[in-house]
Length: 355
Image (cartoon, rainbow, N blue to C red; front, side, top):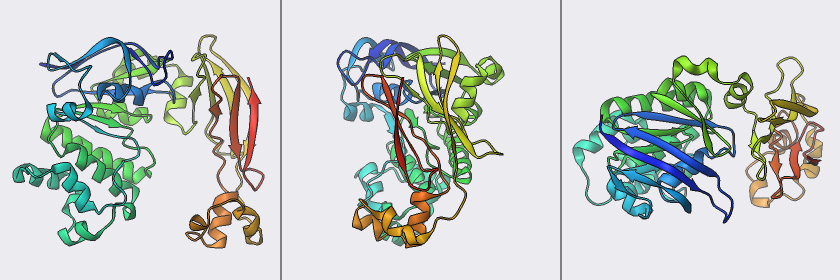
């Protein structure tokens, strides 16, 4: 097969002196799909941005169709046939669906190609009147991701980078998105770099997957190799654990595991990859009681009035005080402390944990 993309020893990052990616090597042939998986902070999305020249590079080279593209602008890369669907299904929310599509397709339109896209992506089959009047911010999460995909495919790219296409979607919408992507691969023969935290979807969709760790490729595997991944790493990738590597010591990650089915508790913990050790920091219970709406004033303190208008008192109280216990741990810049939030007490609390 013809080699389409080659990354040789790529090293780079956003901040001077701090390399998120370190010595990345990757070869991708026409028609292949490679999955990039790993913890938050491991460099998955950064690798996608590196291909699009969205981050500074310090060493190495990226070649596309045999030519170096390391110094080319993002717009020039798009003209050469590289496109990216960024995380979260990014579209222009203040524009209509129609206007979003017009910006992507431009003035030179291939009607046959547009017809093919319509047969693949459901949102494009909406009546033109609806497309012209429906604002992008009124779309459901699944529809917004479909629109973002259509925009990424508008210029019939040779290489498509998908940055977590399932992020923020319901299970049903995730299934629909991957059904669409399977058809895109089958009909359009586009080469794909899939950045994904859902390891099961990545393995099912891709020819091979790369597990990133500490900015390097830690493991290359296909479906039959899935058992080779450490059980801990596999658990982090498939569950909603918000793992985040320490910015100064990427051997250390802060995580909160998925709520226990019986106790509804999350456990916050450090994990040391080098020592293969786990240190529990505490257990946090998920609230499962409807909050008292009389506390609406308490919950609304400090919240923008425009946001408050979107919620009824009962819904607002419920959203701010109940049901969820996502800890969202985040490191400080020096890697010495972690901040996390918890709403298991009935109101959101912020905690600081020293390493």
